[in-house]
Length: 592
Image (cartoon, rainbow, N blue to C red):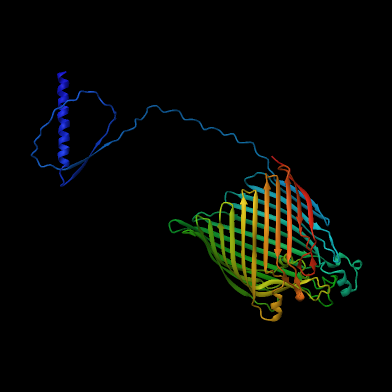
C-alpha cells in the first residue's frame, strides 16, 4: 500500500509539472518552435477508478523558455489475423433458354383495281460471324381510268444478301439484286387518240405505249471499323449495275469507292479522325436507232441515230471529324471532275466546301448547326426514270447537276414529349433537273429533260409530340422560292415547271397496347405550273393504315390511300386513281 501511494504521488507531481510547464510556455509570443509527438500503440479508452489526490506544486523556473507547439496523433493499427479462409469457387451461371427468333416473314395483300402486294423475307439465325438471306417483293396495279384507259404499273424485285466477319475487325458484305419495272404511257384520252392519230382504243395494244426496265446489280464491300487513336482504318466498295429497256436502250454503271481514316489525339483532351474518300463513277449509255419504231404516237423522223456515250465522274473528299470545346466539327473539301465522250462536250472541275459545325446548348436541349456543302450528281437513265417514269424513251445523257448548299438548322427539345425543328437553306444549282412535254410525240404523253440554272431558298419547320411511344403527332411544311439565273425567255419558263411553292404534312400514329396500330396522314401540295400555261391544281391527300397484331407471328393490315378521292395530277395529262384500298396479313414462322 505504501508503494502504491508513492507511485501515485510521483505520477501526480509529474502530471502537474507538465500542465504548469505547457501553460507557461504557451504564454510566450516569440520564436515559436514546432514539434510533433506521435504516439503509437493499442488504444483502450478505459477510465480507471481511483481516489482523487491533490498535491499543489510550486515550481520556480528561472530559465529562458522556448515556445513549443505539440501535436499528438493517435494512429490505431489493424491486427493481421493468422487465419486465412479458403477461396470460394466461381459459380457457374446456367444460360437462359434461347428465345424464339423471327428471322422470316411474308406479307400478302390484295386491293381494288386488282392490286396485289407480296413481300417475302428470310435470313439466317444467330451467328457471330455470318449473316445471309433473301428478300422478294412485288407490287402492281391493273386498273382502268375513265377516258384514259388502262394505267397498269408493276414492280418486282429479288435480293440475295450476305455478310461475313473475318477476325475481329474486317467485315465483308455483298448483295445481288434483280428488278423488273413496267408502266404505261397512258397520258392521253380517247379524244386525243382519235384527233391525233385517228384511232380508237380497240385499234391499239398496251404494248404500243408500254415501258419496261430490267436491272441487275452487284454490290461488294469490305471495311474495318478501327477508330482508335494512331490506328489506320479503311473501307472499299464496288457497285456494278446493268439497266436495259424493252426498246433496246442500255446503261452500264460502274462505281468504285473507298476511304481511309486515321484517329489522332488533339491537344490533351480531344480526339479527331481524318478521312480521305475517293470515288470513280462511270456510265456507258447505248441506244439503237430504230428501237422506238413501234412506239405509239412518235413523229416521223424523230428518232436519233444509234449512239454510245461514256460519262466519267471523279470525286476526292478529304475531311476531319472532331469534338472541340463542345463543338462537333466536320471540316473538309470536295474536288470533283466530270468528262464526256460525246463530241463538243467539255470537261469540268469543281471545288465544294464540306463543313458542318454544331453546338449543344441549354443542357443539350437546343442543338444549332451551320453547314456549307455541295456536290454533283449524274443524270443517268436510272435516275431520270425514278424521278419521272414517263421520260423520253430515246434517252440522251445530260449534264451533271452541280449544287452549293448553305444550311442553318435548329433542333429544340422543348420537353420530354415535345420537339421542334427549323431549317433554312440556300442552294446555288447548275443543271437543275425538270421536265417538259416532248412535241415529237403526237399524243402529248412523253417528257423530255430540261436543265436550268437557278437559286433556291427553302424554309422548313416541323414539330413532333411523342407520348411514351403510344401517340405520335407531327406537323411540318416547307416554303420554296426560286430565282432563275438562266438567260432567255424559254429557259425561264421551263425552270418553273413542276416545282411547288410550298407543301404541308400532318400525321398521327397511335399504338394501343401493342395490339392495334393506327396511322393517319394528310398532305397538301401547292399548285404547280405545267406545259402550255397549264396549272396543275393543288394536291390534297389523306392516307391511313390500320394493323391488328393477333400475336407476335400473325397480324392483319388495311392500307387506304387517297381517301379524299381527288383525281390529282403530279405530271400533266397523267391523272391518278381516286382511292386505293389493300387488305392483307403478315405471318412469321418462329424458329429456335
